[in-house]
Length: 130
Picture 1 (tube, helix red, strand yellow):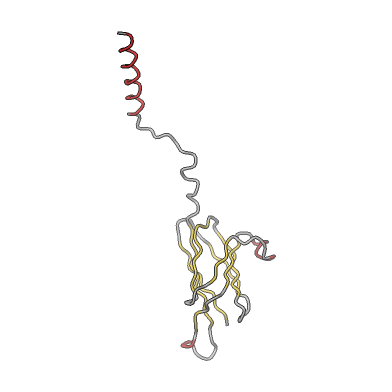
Picture 2 (picture 1 turned 180 degrees about the horizontal axis):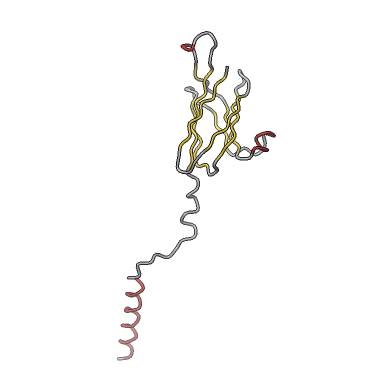
C-alpha cells in the first residue's frame, strides 16, 4: 500500500505543478526586444537645371554610426550598405535612438546627416547629391 501511496503522491505533485498558471520567467526571452529599428535610404543626384532629370544613385555606400566621435573619425561603423540600382537600401536590427549617417559615392562628394530611430519604427532618409 505504501508503494501505491508514493506513486499517487508523485502524480498529485506533478498535477499540481503542471496546473500552476504562473509562467517561469526566461531571462533571455526579451534579449533582442530593443533591436527593432529600421532605416530606409533613398539616394538621388539633383540637377540644377531641371528637376525632371534628377536620378537615383546606385552604388552609393551608406555608413551609420551610433557614436558621434566614431562618425567624425570614421571608425567602428555600426552598419554599412550599398544602394541598389534604384538608389535604395535598408538597415534593420538597430537598437539605438540616434544614428549619424555618411553617404559616399566615387562620382560625387560626401553627404552627411543624422536620424532619430524611435523603438518599433522605420525611419526614412533621403540623401541628395548636388
